[in-house]
Image (cartoon, rainbow, N blue to C red; front, side, top):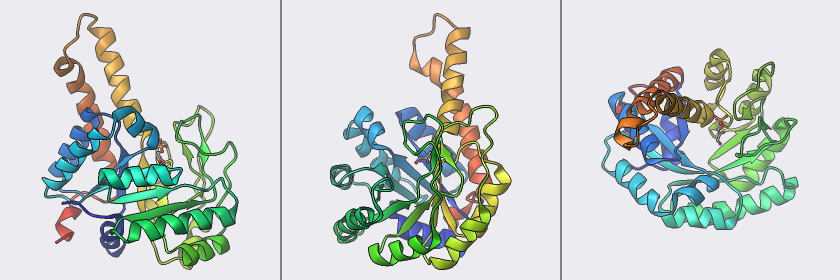
Length: 287
Ligand code: 13P
């Protein structure tokens, strides 16, 4: 079943769980994530970053849509960190059901103006819109962010959501994109999250979901987080296993001999995250 983000997260918020948004950058990742989500009867968000679609090509989305349409679990196809009107219209043309416009590094008024334009366009055809306020950190990931986190201001968040009519808001409360280097410990500012959540009536999105303390991620669900973006934890598990397989078996060249162990590893991470966010089994709540 293909859902938009608004309808998917409405159920999640009512039943106190969050849905992971997994960045998919290859067919093996798509297939493994869908198989595990189906096995656990869990809703899932498949998200694709502009850099990823540039690599994969638009035809890849036809396969993603086929998976979603033929599945009995709810699936959202989401544009991660769209940076321009081009990114967003390309995604909508490809059949995504949800888009992010990330103008968080632009001046506040510009962020509002561009986001409003995207909302007007997308809502006409029932596509959901996520925007970002404040800027999350960056551990050297190509997904962006600033060296120093710019924490989301609750007053601005309330004003921004009222002005733009977005469906979900990505906030900066202490996370960073990418894997944390040794010695850098993330800390989620749960008090700030509570304050933001008190001002908003839409689901909150946690970007940079990899490498954070599980307890803090779990706690964030109590205070409005309905979507957790996860990329690095999955990709690193998958490609570390590909590296192992290839270095232990120097003569391998058949994909169906190289990838199965990495797919298994990836499925373990997907299962772990679905359990962590309390998503497992929740597909039954969607009619
Ligand atoms: P991680 O790579 O830290 O999981 O972040 C993913 C993300 O936020 C995509 O938008």
